[in-house]
Image (cartoon, rainbow, N blue to C red; front, side, top):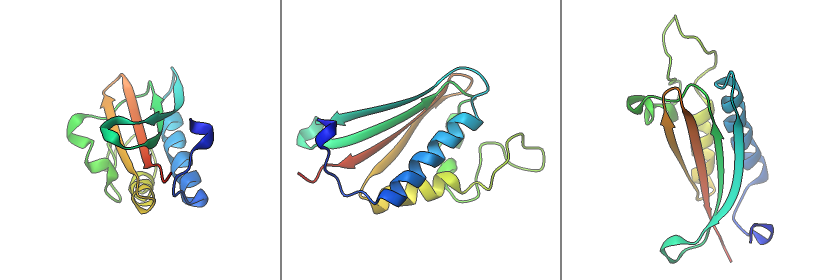
Length: 124
């Protein structure tokens, strides 16, 4: 059960990751919805605690999905980009998640939305 979750989490890093992901969901969703889901994953004989943040925003093209976790990279780049930011939020978030022995993945479709899933191992 999630109320008994026991994982190796640094609270400050975790809060920064969640804040970054929620801020991005708000920034890239002009209308529609943003969701936050907590669940456990017991597949493959291991226990994980997961957080999924989803939105119905602009989405990320397939060819940009790996780039978004690199420092200073954004889906829209160059002088004519629509959305502001440094391009550091997702790279910092990925690093923080990895420092907590977790994983971050993204599923996305242009004009449909994005789902970012955080997965942390249980230490029970």
